Image (tube, rainbow, N blue to C red):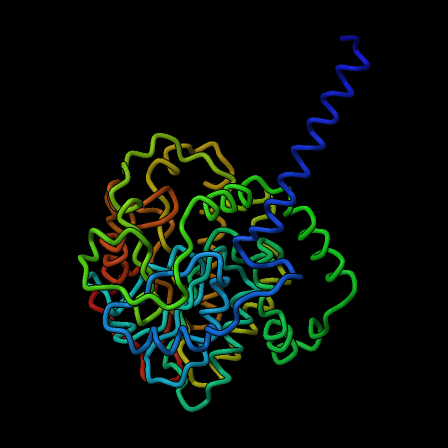
Length: 384
């Protein structure tokens, strides 16, 4: 085979590989972020699912290939029931619960709604806050924002587009400067959606969804040991998540903590993003809702690789979070560093997700507390 034929073969192979990747990601679409041009069974709606979830005794099996996390959490946010705290953030907070055996944030949140979503970003903060505030008859006393190293930036995830109307509504409420959906932002978002078709991590999620049996939309979980789990993930009535038994019993020895973690080198926060987030905090305070910023830890193996960019991001973002808290007289709980919380190396499911045993220690390791806010201050067992 001559060089031209060889180059042509390589080009055709790469083209085929990219085409298969794009088609798989578009059709399977584990995040449910692309438009569907085929009929779907809509007889069971997310609204109905959440109603059954709230009424369930042991929770429901998490459905596969049916809805985006955000479909469920949107309905949970506006469901009219009494609760103390709304938790908003990414998958790092999904195991925080007032319902499970190993409860977390029990002093701050005696009864909570867990609105954590996969890949939760600043855009999700705005959209979910807007949804929470729509239910004026049952507002929470506290909103807890789970902060990640990427949280003080826009554009770190695409999945918020599932409820983009609520995102833009909240932007309009808190800042006229950023109120409208402008063409350049829309074009950037569409380009990002296109590039996501070739995303390797998204492909892994697509292949994982293909390999798993589809779960019926409403399947009651039987009574089970939450420390062991079931064959499938379970969503508890407060919206928190119990991982599958396979994941819970997986080897907990993480030799290498290297990962990009959505970090853009030397761009650890955007000033305009901090301005918007601060306006969001002040908006909640105007509703007489206390705000807490929550930092959940990353595994010790991540911290052992001190030369990677995420370490600098941890330090810079954590310091910036404390600055935001001090300026707004709100509280910070936790730390990105597991040693500051007392979490052990076997109290993680992977390098960035703590187990409930670790998360139970968050309030006992209150890293920072600013002056009390306007309303009755939240009391804690330990003050540092």
